[in-house]
Image (cartoon, rainbow, N blue to C red):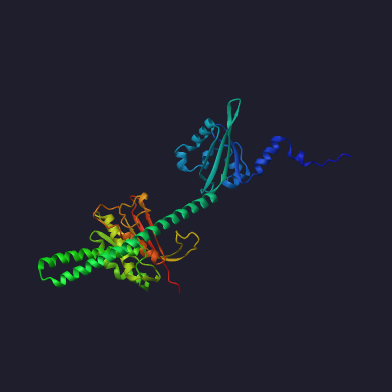
Length: 382
């Protein structure tokens, strides 16, 4: 007696049926056919999983629907098909759009299908590589942050050595000027001595800024509420900004308590306000000082977890800083100002103070969009 049971091989049917079942079973790749003009002819479950469309949604529609609006405006969909036709294959990584409007990073392959030199259509394969792309970007950012931290550390060590030597020379100069001033009764010589003393005092100030950048300045830590400290200093900061520039202070809703060197903190904020003023002038403008507490991590410490940082953000509506200067603005003596308009030590003092306090500084700026410099300081542990 013959069995009426259907074998698995019979269930699969002919070769074309088997191939269709194979493609539809693949869920990690969107695999589908296009006609020569780019209209979708077939669809698999991988396409539904990755892009969010059912077969009924897309079959008969143009595959450009998966591209971003900007790519469509630039004519990329048809250009990619033409590249595949002429070169025998098109491969790329780019952003694509899902049904819900969200974007994903796609690895795309388009192969032309010919029969007797006639183009029948295209085979298109898309893979979602968003997580890999994000991981690679995070790794690149961590590597760049580490390289920047190592460079700044090396510059700091060099600066520290130079600052100590320069400070020793200034000590000799200042002591000698004191002796000359004490032993002379000539008013003309006294005026020269006074001028020299003022120049030496300026040199001492520069040395202190260099020592701060190189973490060679001993910090006198005090438990301080940053809200109260900046409220006390707002008049000084407004005077430093000058006429025509408004300084707006936005305090946090809660006390922001940190162990800081008050004098160094005040100098850092004053340096930022002065830099913003110089960027805005001669036009009128606004400098905003915003205080908050954020849960974040030091970008130079790739293995560190997030922790609470107290932030002081100084924002101006000036011309902004070109992207090619972002990595260098905190280096000693680097400045985008004209010769004679700045020492290039203001931001390096801010960087040194934040680093020595256990925090970091973040710069955000675009040409024509102003500049924001944020000091991050570790919140005091209760």
